[in-house]
Amino acid sequence: MSKKIVIIGAGSLSFSSRLTADILSYPALSDVEIRLVDVHPERLSYAERIAKRITVEGGYNKAVITATNDRKEALKGADFVIISILIGGVEAIETEVDIPMKYGIDQCIGDTLTPGGIMRCVRTLPVLREMAHDIMDICPDALVLNYTNPMSMLTWGMMEAEPELQLVGLCHSVQGTGGEWAKRLGIDFEDVNFECAGINHQAWFIKYEKDGEDLLPKIRELAVKPEIWFGDSTRMEYLKHFGYPVTESSGHGSEYNPWFRKNEQTIARYCPKDFSEWNGGSGFIKELYSRPWKETMEKMATWEKPVSLERSHEYGSIIINAKATGEKAVIYGNVKNNGLITNLPEECMVEVPILVDKNGMRPIKIGALPTQLAAINRTQINVQQLAVEATISADPEILFQAMAMDPLTGMSCTLDEIRVMTRELMQAHEKWIPVMKGKLPKDQPLVYLEEPVGQVDKHVDPAEANQLD
Image 1 (cartoon, rainbow, N blue to C red):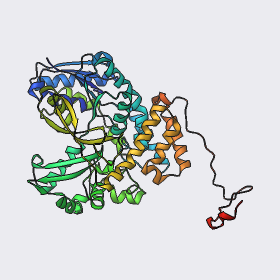
Image 2: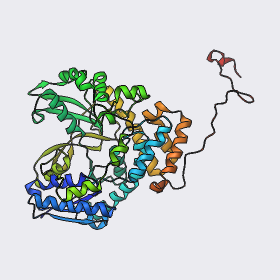
Image 3: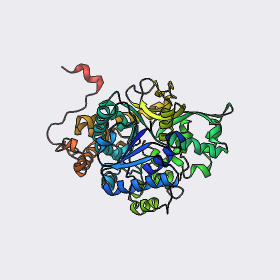
Image 4: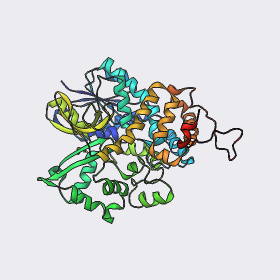
């Protein structure tokens, strides 16, 4: 029986077409039914045309492509559900970058942590929790692959909504980073034995070897070579100071800490975009999402800009093939910790190796990360937990607290400033966050007068404390 695969958010510029081509490249999946779902009619129409053109160009004449804006109808009988959505579009992205910038918070990507990632959570998580409920009602045995950011927050919140959901959060940063290091070392990535673990966009290669040789010492040497350091400087600084390669781009990595985006000078030093557009330039996310999509999708649909039929390194199709055929595969995905990484919180989402076969997904226990790496991860996890709790409880005070715990925000602002900024962000996002309708953090008084008024409590010297009544 052919498998039924639902792609929600199919109107993205290239993501659904990439997944479609990857899935159909497996002989065992060449007769699948792919159901494309999107709320944007024009984008959905383009996605359908592109997917159907892929079936023609690839000779996949048994595959069935359908398109609908009715999510619940599409989910009937689904074996796999792939989710990649964006709530609020370019307008929301611009406000969540521009408003914090007024307060000195300079973001590059802002889709994982920082004010941008936190606001994405508030906009997106309620929708994904509804999807989780629908899946458990309509197709409870379906395997759910979430590609939507902020990955850790959203997968965490979905699992809170439906603990029995068969869910994994997916990214391409593990295989992407691993492949980069193989290229720098002049070896074939297929020959590398590696182990990577941590959290999404901040997982660590704690093993990287070939033919039994530990290659981490060579990687540490390469990290300080100018031809590698420039263009990937933030990640190389992590490696230089903490000892292990970290996933994702330097643009992402520059935002998760207080070290690299302190002011124009540190951004110019560590995040120059002259060498790579992903190296951390200010507001790069706005440029990325403002790129024209209609002309590009038209060219893809007419094959003037053909979609590569060669399988990519995305894990989605690998998981679907392994589950459908029983052919074993190891992928890296985001799942609830439950002791997989022993020095990270039990309830958080961790990125670890996962064995996939006909029985589903079996995450592999890592044990303890090096202490310094777990400590860096935990600064993110604190923010993730508060953002998820704020969204589920619709509590603007907890949302403010999530902002206050964010390393980049805390580096840049006082608590009073963060509170005012949170109010402004919520007001700008009001139409996309109905869960918070009519709510704002408390308008606390500002107390920083140059001259105190009236009686002021004096600090008591501890040595004098025993003399007090």
